Amino acid sequence: MRFNLIIFCLGTVGSLFSQNSYPSTRTIFFEKNSDQLSLQSQEILDSLILEITNPAEELLLFGHTDADASAAYNMNLSRNRTLAIQNYFFSHNLPNRLHLEWRGEEKPVNANLEISEKALNRRVEIFRNYQTPSNQLSQLKKAAEIFVIQSNRDTIITCKEGTQIFVRAGSFNTPNESSEIEIEITEFYKKSDFLLNNLTTTTTSNELLESGGTIEIHANVKGESVELNQGSTLQVIYKDKKENDGMETYYAVEGKGVTKWTTDLPKDSKALEPILISEAYRIRNMDTMEIVTEFIINVDGLNYKATKSLKRGHRLSPFQESVTQELLDQKEYVNSIFFSTDRALTVRDLGRINCDRLKRMENTQQLSVEIKSNLIPSLVLKLDSINMIIPFSRREGNVYVFDMVPTNSSFDVIALYIGDQGIFMGQLSNEKILDSQNSSESKRYIGLKKCTERELRLAIEQTDSSL
Image (cartoon, rainbow, N blue to C red):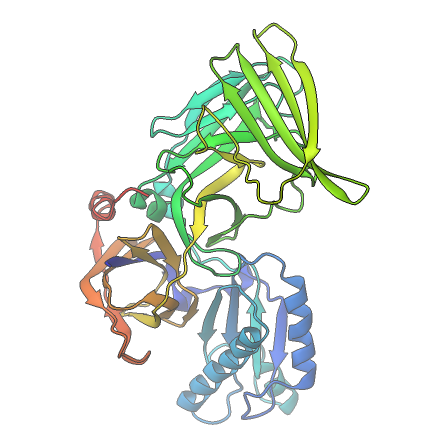
């Protein structure tokens, strides 16, 4: 097994971080010469944990001290204070990615002379919704394809990279029945697409996913965004999905720096009838169509499968409805059918939609990567033999930690910075972590070299293999 570790450096140097741009959500204070959390501080952190509902949100922990003792002592003490809060979050299973910075006595909030003033400087500030400063990766974002469809017509959209999408008439909440809808679709199948568009393959609970590709769908009428109607769905065939391969529909949970995936719909999404088990579209052409919807209903304590069929012989003909009901066989397995195949996935919301399955890795090791630069990067780990791209778990200064890296596998390290200072990249090749190594041995170092955007794109495109 071979995999690549790709490092994206998206921001400015750490010393230029402006706390004013990220007002602190909480400030945790410490006793003199201590990194122990008080009971009051633990209560504050418990309250914060309950407030954080988006697992893709990132947090910055910024540690400080007063001016007593030596600068070196205070620098280490401020680091230990941030680690104390990080460990508290770990012990309470907070899944969010953390960034740790510490500055010792360098950033006081006052003159640091009186006892009361010094007490205010013995602190760790917690910043929510953190994003690496001066993120300019968006300049490399892939352009979408544009399709114009009629809202009152059944439509099959075929994208240039092979994705097929069936849109049933009346699926969108348009101003009127005959509105013209502009559909924007972006396909992400190549690994360079994932890397240049900041896409990774982990769930909201930090499980690893094997991807069959991602699409991004948006719709608008005369520039105004429209969404799917309640209960409406799209049928999507991803070009690389195989029959019975276990791939499922995953929806994006967005953060400012990372995207995570879930099979659960967002809370504000369209509600579906909970008894729906499948919806199948049998299509010979755009005139002849049968739509079969299956439900589970309970009658006098027994479960029945109810099947509703809508069938028409011509586009202008009304649908003829029929309903059947039979006692449910618990062993029965029902597949959705689209274009006479079971490759289609049902999509119930717009935005980024991933075609994935969970991937269990038997032997993994922790990996640390230290950037020999004062730039702030974002790292991802790219596997070649498995369609998986993993973001780093946490950052401690200029050291980036991955918690689950497959062992005995070759990997490359590529570093990328896009910011006000220009474009930089670096690369390590043919690295490997062995089962016998401990985490202290599993550390890598990388420097950065200035390059052009063209050189950057060429280097990233060399990592391509189909997702």
